[in-house]
Length: 498
Image 1 (spheres, rainbow, N blue to C red):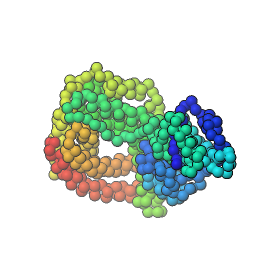
Image 2 (image 1 turned 120 degrees about the vertical axis):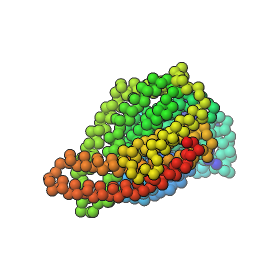
Image 3 (image 1 turned 90 degrees about the horizontal axis):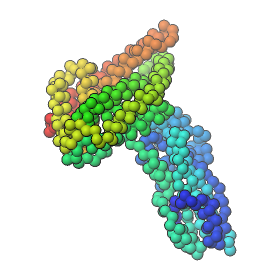
Image 4 (image 1 turned 90 degrees about the vertical axis):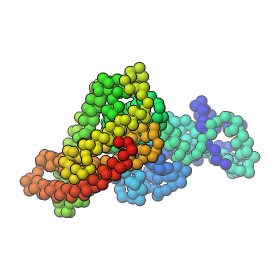
């Protein structure tokens, strides 16, 4: 029988063993110790897929949360945070499919001590095995101790074993279930939970201000949680989630501008626009670097080496831009913006003229107005002749409308929101790809002008970018053919709202 308990803070491992020996006629023998390091992404992609990456004894392996190995042990003295930088192995392939571009972080470290109990009268007859685990959650170098736990595996058929179980029950210890990596990681994940997914529960007749403040609190927390990851430049998703949270907050205030005090809303929207502008160029550089392998694959092999100087220039520029962003995120101006954001989200005394309006009625009106503006400014039959600037404006309008549906979906029947959200995502994806190709093409030509090298090398790099530009244009032509279809599908989906 195997049972795990949490020890009270006033009982140490040594005290527990002394009490046990004083109560029973048993010998306690040490079987050794082990230190295990658990790694996961900031948003717990492994844990959410019931996996745990564990490093112990200079090897690393992937485990299921019920303590079963799901990969071979791979020798590893130090784990590069980006899985793409690992040496090729079956474990690398498994992890890439799970974590994608997110970096691995140490989330917990556990020190385990193993003991065996044997009857004094018969030293070779084992009564039980004990495992003590002292753990800590780790986060950017900070260590937060976790409660000490003991797992007792008592052997059936022994008189002492039965008494041992009764004694453990009498101590009033807190039983823990399940055992294995799930226990440690569930405890850590509860303390360090993170998700940028919108999942609110709003009632149709609730006051609009309550819903708006709830969303602002959530988005502010996302911004604060991702700031450290940006400062340490752990991976590009920290900046992405930061940007999306800022953009969502600004959009919310813009679509419902009279729920909070109008002057405060206007000021905060201006400040959020400033925050977003700080990150624009860095995000564009990140996207360019993330596409590097695809761009090289699209070129003839003989031209690929000539792109090396360009991407080195991109990395150099990214370093400088990231440094400036770090400076901006450590200023008093940044702190003041977040303080105003927090005040807007929590100061219930500051109300706008629509604070008390019923949520569903106010949101329905806002969505209807947005739909009507989109349809009047972008008739479907004009899409084929739309300029990149017009398609960009349509993309921004789609984002704002999608945010409104996602924010307040719970206040309406699912059949009213599920299809519009799905159609908006599809349309937004097509428009986003079109916009990215425009941005990337312009960036490549801007950056190549700063690339050092001989005229011959520059000529070959220019030729490579010419070929990429042709590829971009072919892709855009295909995407433009999709815009009309996806927009028509979207119009049909939102017809009940417009």
